[in-house]
Amino acid sequence: MPGVSADRADRAAAALVDTWGHLMALHPDAWMVTRDGVAACATGIPSPGLNGVWCAGRDPDPAEVRRLLGLLRARGLPHMLQMRPSSGPAALEVAEAEGMTPDEDLALMRLDDPARLEPADEAVPELAIRRLGADEAELHAQTAAAGFGHDGDHFLRLLPPPVMSAYGLRAYVGEVEGQIVTTALGVTRGEFVGVFNVATPPAHRGHGYGAAITARTVQDGLATGARWAWLQSSAASRRLYEALGFEALELWRRWVSL
Image 1 (cartoon, rainbow, N blue to C red):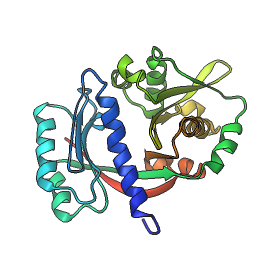
Image 2 (cartoon, rainbow, N blue to C red):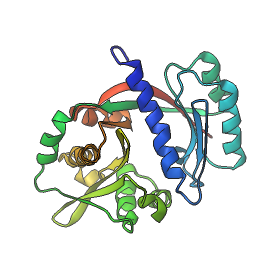
Image 3 (cartoon, rainbow, N blue to C red):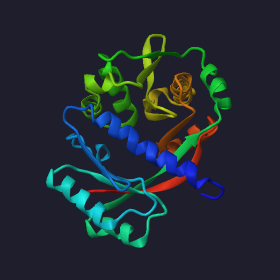
């Protein structure tokens, strides 16, 4: 996007692949391989968003993308493909050649200045945010499923005890009068913290809960050594993150298998 530093975008793209690799190396059922800026991951969970190929390089090798998609197809898993906007025509043609369907683009976003986080965290004093223990993955899974309208078992299978116990991973729920109303997950890896699964069930939206729990997730990552944060956002959530100081670096193209 205009005015965005190429280096900042490259580092955020690399952070995405690094974080997935870190978590999937601990997952007992997952498989992941990375080569020349192209990463493929299979969790075994029947959801296209949890199996796929991410192209973190600026212009991925079409042959490598095709090879990795073939490995996923052979496993019989629904899967997706994500590419950066700098990808060349030959790489972009792979999705069509593989019979994949265009899906919503995702914004790769980054936050370097935490100045707007504290006001968001303090804006909803009735919200009590707490970090979940490694044995409380089900609370995150149920709330995320309600927020995204997906199968709760998928989130639960993504976060078995070895992953929930991963160094740098923190899962949170936010409660109002004892009822869980929002959730999020953060993963700190050296200089950055990635934000995932920010979800508020429809009945609890419009109160600032998602912004508050996102702010807490980033603040805890910064407090433990990270210097910046990243996430991927749909168009529906982008304004929430921009209000917290996140900047959209790139719109990643996305396709899903039929």
